[in-house]
Every structure is written in structure tokens, then in C-alpha cells.
Amino acid sequence: TTRRTIHTWKKTGVIPKESSSERVYKLFLLSNNWIDEGFVIERRQLKKKIINRSSIYDMLTSETIDTQQILFAGNSFSVLSENDDNIELF
Image (cartoon, rainbow, N blue to C red; front, side, top):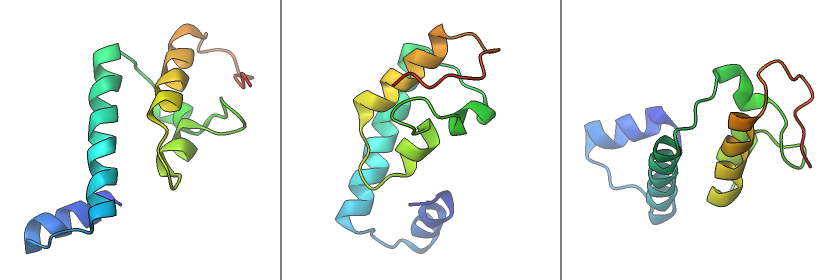
């Protein structure tokens, strides 16, 4: 589900499929948890491989969203030095 799709839903009043609605809601909750935890990440870090050769971007765009894994990755970035180019943990 893309930002453009959400804007189209909003403009046209289309009711999205249940699976799409659930995904958007899950991302909404995840983003609130991310903010509550105080995680900050630079855009370039989103595509850095961090867990099981996956980046946060990969995890966010995968078919299923593992909230705990994404929050763990965010926490990992918060404790690692920004100058470390080899961030892969697992």
C-alpha cells in the first residue's frame, strides 16, 4: 500500500480491501511505537542490512510486517555508532 494509494482512497471515498486497511493500521501503530521509543534514523540507514540480511525498508515492505523485529532494528540503530559501516547483527 503506497502513499499515493491512500490519497486516492481519501479523494475518491473508496473503501480499501480489509487486508490493505489492516496493513495501514499496523504501520500506523508501528510508527507510533517508533516515535514513543524515541528512535531516530537517517533515510540512508533504512536500506542498511541489519537483521538476517534485511534492512528496515525490507521489513516494512515485506508481505508480513513483524513489528517486534522492526522495533528491535530501530533500537539496534539507536545504540550503534553512525560511523559503523558493517552494522549487520545477525
